[in-house]
Length: 144
Image (cartoon, rainbow, N blue to C red; front, side, top):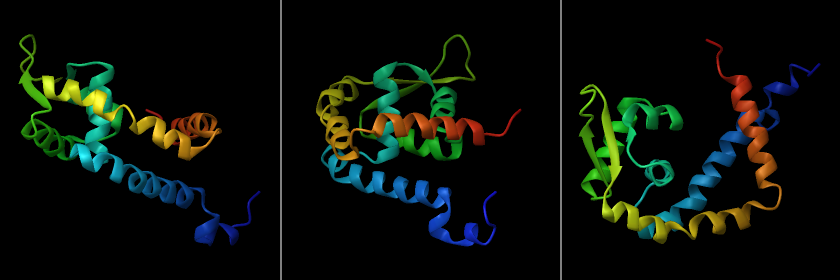
């Protein structure tokens, strides 16, 4: 069992290490995304759309863990930049679909060098670490 006093030290907490890594990732992405005029959350939305174009706003939010209050302004900025279009689903007016514009599709080629640049910096064990973090996230999610 872990000593409770030891857990009070900031550096001993796993959550702090994850927090620090998150900030480091955001900082590492910033200079790679700036030439494209993107923020890290905008890049994540585009990654999803490059995987599968025409996602519902609700699905994007679920995949990224973002609520509509955060996602809506982000999508408006992407739309204002001419990278995505939003439209009501003809079959279900309650749903808003997000699709890439030709400019948004073309940006995928411009962004292609981002992943390899960061994968190289992350090291050989990055895939194993990613898998462990995803497992941890799943264990920490509240059960319905």
